[in-house]
Length: 478
Image (cartoon, rainbow, N blue to C red; front, side, top):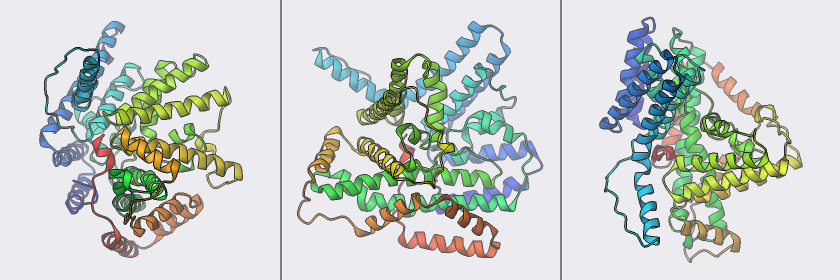
């Protein structure tokens, strides 16, 4: 069920109504929400619901045994079991064909023969997200940062809570478990805020991301040799805002749905194309993945504690694995390597100088220096997006060639003007002052429910008239 489908709208109305009717009864309320979340996932593939249930049961009991034992050796063995099970399942479904092809090609280059068993595997939707969620739970219990969940229902809900199940944010158990212990109180203002956030995400996805995909991105990236330099540049810019609108749109909808049910999910995007550096970009883009990689990979590798060159190594390893997490293809690894290179160059350039965290930057304060830094960072990120979106290195090479030579388009090849207007709108909205956006949100929240309903109906009509064809969310494939 796609968030922007009529089927999901009916599903959510039923879930919302029953959930709040069970407000005072904790166990029935949570059991119902758990069942609804599994129904939601089974709409994609019923058989893979068993896979989630298996991983949930495995990590639930491993974490409880880990907390009870005092033997450090046994605790490490239990953690190793959790890591092996989770990454083993992820590796089998997501990377088996890729790694066997790499081994086959390497063996052939050495004059050897290698034949791996042929497996017809379908990638379960959301496996990368919920695997990281269950894995972070056992790691946090091992580190004694949290106590294990006493209720299997509670832990299972941290894994499959349906707003964030398929494409994040990556929500850690420590962020959800405390919210389950508090009896929810329906608050009209909070509901209105969640509904507005959902519509913002819907606007990003349907009107901007899907239209950019149809009119600019897909035509160029499917046949890059046919388009000129200017058209290719518009497609690259278009993809930057397509993937942002698509993924941040999903995150906004997930946060809005959760808020209407009384939950708060962590922020996943913070205007990433306002970043002044690559490290700043990763503090703003897919924040829950960035912090996961930082806390469970970069810091355990040594972080920045081992000197400049070890820090560079740790940055490169983290970004290479971050690229591989996105997909089993060399283009994703190249994307991760490029961002690792960016971060290494930034680290060597800055030395030990510390930059201000993004939270301390006034996003509405602009100077010529900041404009140049933001523009440079944006174009470096766009260079990475070419590898991320291209179907092959050959296609990526063609795109870079056409951009560098400002090639002429093939006769009769044009881009739809509607896409260019939507790209301009996406850029303007991304850089609109915070104060203006907050003022609009506050004004809409203060209006009478009848007026808000009329605005919602008008927004749906606008999306229906000008929105593009429904496309699955980009991150469903990850």
